[in-house]
Length: 244
Image (cartoon, rainbow, N blue to C red):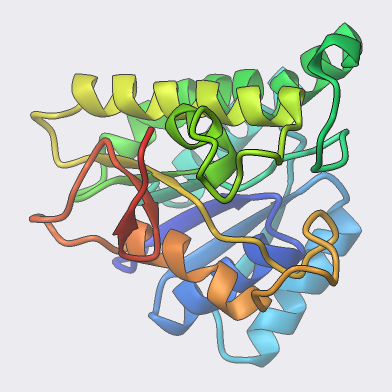
């Protein structure tokens, strides 16, 4: 079994997930990219390998429960543990603007929650026994500033008009999971935090976003590599604490 740390990044074949894998890999961490399309995941891993990163690809779909156990078996067989879990996979089915919550189809809410919340919770619960075997496990939940109820309720906040009900609510629920799991694991070596990457030029963020992808990965990388004295149960953008 490898002495190096090993990280699993869901939705890691492109965008913020791929850049997070790159930055962690440059720190000497073995990165395993979870990708719904194994061919795309393998291509991403090969790209990272060409840059000197120890990278592998695993076919993984956050909406398929059978893949949770398959991921467990993969890490148990090859490493016996997981040091870093980055719950990066996420979807949005809405535009980010003055949407009508009353007109949001319930099916859109359910589909969004399946990926952004239920799947993430179920995967984390499945993999937690392997994270407990790490000398210093780190769980990073990719949230969003749009999950902040405090900022959504404040007419003076920069996101006050950016209402996308299904997406926002799924990230608020994910933040609740962060708080509750961190509380449960408070007396262990495992740290659990929510990350707001920022508005980043990705497929979801579009080219209108002000941040480049390398900067969008910084928060996840920071929380994945926290020292023993680092925070847990927090909500961060880079080194800034966000209000719940």
